[in-house]
Image 1: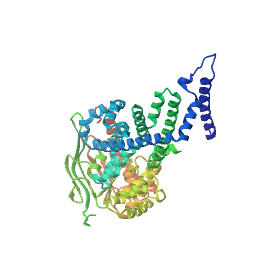
Image 2: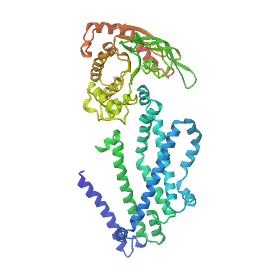
Image 3: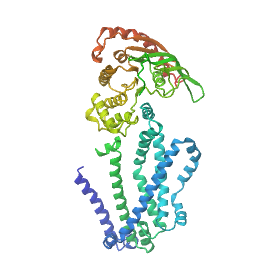
Image 4: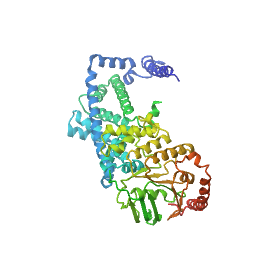
Length: 262
Length: 276
């Protein structure tokens, strides 16, 4: 399928869906509204709400806060995950001792931690960052752990035979291998950083996209909820595009990354 | 790196026995009392049936495995730890996938403290020697199997090891590429005649390349059961040496012994109890 054809079909899907939504929420069928605007709003209302947010500029502050929380959660969670992943993989005894606790912590649905973080860290950004960190940390941790554990024994033996010391093996073999595993989970961990931020905001905050959605919901402003959702998904898609660009640069040496290009 | 003294024997395995402890606490003896020497500048090939412990023997010479009994001497000194005088060419892909061909070759010098710029220049020189001068910026996955072997060869040779240990290095390649690689190896080896210990299951390859061919019996507890000098002229061309009558005579002679071991090895590998 050619690019233009594909793109026009994709746009067609949006037009049909939004058109149907607009139709059934404004034109009664047999004297009966299929999508009552009170519950479903209308595309025009949602659109004007979004336009309003951007023209008045209120949205930027919320976007910036959510972005900042996501970045902090991602950076702190990744750093922690890399450090602990490395440590556990290189010290099997430590890993064995902590294994049940790591599993326990990971099996906990992170949302239940939100109230505790709010108690501990207040309503500011740090309680949201903490929630994001608990999500990102485990993804990165397990990937780095796996990456260090699964270094090819041949490559390792080759490094030793080429005269590498333990420190040099760390730098030239373990580290790149662990990083490649971490980067392969980049999309997931960045996504979870945003989830942590937005859910945290939704549960209690004074700014951010989650706050915006929660506010609209509190006043039965369904149009506002939908508008917030659309802005949020556009925001996540933009971040994802950014991640893809970074990934392409960093993983040029990976066969699958290269195949994706062709 | 080392002092210039030259001992006559590069590698000496003295009744080396290698055993592994199995999961059920039984002990599996892979190689029994192997006695083998490789002289300075000598090219020795080890041939044996599948699973006979050829690679095990090589790992002992490399210091990657410790023999359960017996001794390993490298240039008349007992080996402890890794064999720092040896370069090892692995059967499986051993290049660092996250480094370009050039960086893969340069790494051996870099970790030894050579400034990066000098190391890269030297690496480029070695890549050209193995015919890959134009592929310096490629990552391993962008190279063919044969090209990866060339890079691996350059990676090992750039450190100028006194001993070259090769574990079926051309095993995964197709027949034509193997012969091309064999010729390349001989060409590079002729320049400074390192001691080479070359493991293969291909008797023709062994005769075509080596000065001496050593035969191992089928495992477990395999021993060295034959040792032939290869009386063929050097320099050799792998493509043409196979047509030499001397090649055929030697091949027939060695094969009559190897055949039985290959059959034994095959039978053992099909019996579930004997499998490890």
